Length: 184
Image (cartoon, rainbow, N blue to C red; front, top):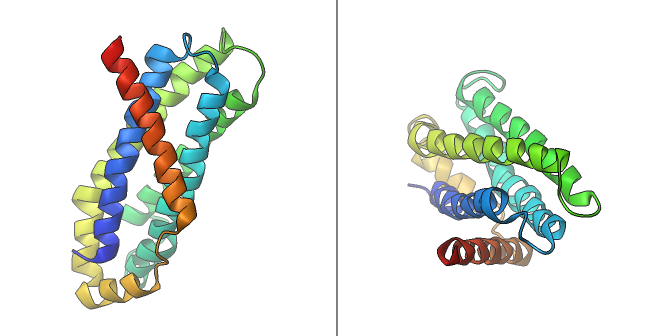
């Protein structure tokens, strides 16, 4: 497996861990958390800047483009499906961002919106990750080929300090809500 695909799979492991924390935050802890909007804002930062800005960027701007050059259509088939999932996910994250930007406790309609958006987003991304790991990435290895994937390894920028800070944020959130789940 190419370095890029190995990195993307490893990022999926990290993302799924943070998705579990987001689920637990929304399902079990949001009402008891003393500052739920700022915590939700931290999740939004991770989702927008790491999941979309780092991970999806590598897929959309590098891997998907290589697969398109190898003959897959941009707006249909597997690439169209993955891009659609990314767009739908951005919509869910926008709802979470609006909730995080509000004032006061999360009550009534805010809790309803949170209860809809979080499970929908977590389910979407969990299914999306499964499709990528088990269908798209193996397809990329076959279609694009080892030499062209190796060439991608040379042009995809390495993650810098900003990505590492975002991973640390995700780890902090995941650790916090894993500990809260154990304690409850």
